[in-house]
Image 1 (spheres, helix red, strand yellow):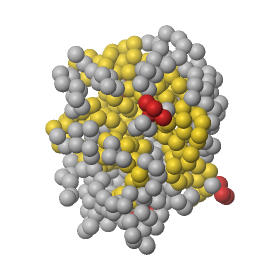
Image 2: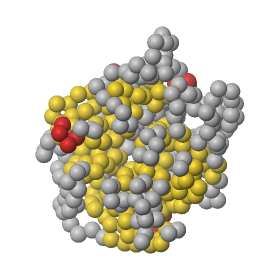
Image 3: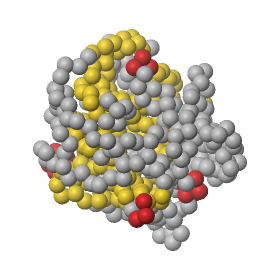
Length: 398
């Protein structure tokens, strides 16, 4: 089934810079410096405007170096990854731990480093977490990987590499990556095409693919390409560019993803098994130079899916979370996405699967928003992507 195309043309022109190997402002280069441990301290609370009223924004902690992913812990604390390769525990009081030991070795160059962090579905008993990261390979190559480990007070233990993108490629960009469990015994892993456009269409390579695995790392028997000699059985969908947003809609059990376009054409998809989402053959974007993507034939082609929602001007999407099941909240039935290039938190209003409206929050902060999660109480937590990155809590407007 082809999804309806929703186009949002933004009046605000964004400055999209060429960084590294044609990486724009929303797809930044990393710096791998050592950050000092921050002590607990009083941090500010402020209010910002929204369509529905005033939003209270509380800084939980600061002093994070380019934080990338945040997981909400049952005790009210958090786990936060820093892209240079550190994992930290943030207490409910905002206290910031020293870097935890036992983190896998990461390739912390360009856009690579330590990326997403999520709790295993059985975390309450296993204390196991999952991390996505760029894993070093031979001859300065690298690829997206996922590892699981048991969380301890000061270190991880029993580290197991769960997934490796193959083959590893040379280059600093487009690793993705987010991790989502579907509640049915599977895990989805989003990735980038490593800024090597043709790989997205090659089924014998894992770049530019959404991957689906069982919780033990094996391939589900009902994956769409199982049994094909010319395709990797891990693949769920393909033709993706750089997926830094992935979330499960708890109302339907559907997995949604969002990905960076080039200069223009960031998009949301609801990926279906075996479907081709078109990159680089179809796109709403152009090269950073202003020239046409060489492989592109236009915005549509036979056998390729239209994006579910597309932005003609790229906000630079990273991080995604649903807010549902909060009757009475003005943010109930919303989809939140971080925006790097636009420096905002995007809130999309939902009527079922239909996107009915959009607003952009936190523009006043002037910060790139890297990740977003929603707590059980409906509070929204975001990470700002900065040398002095922050973990913020947003309380919905009353």
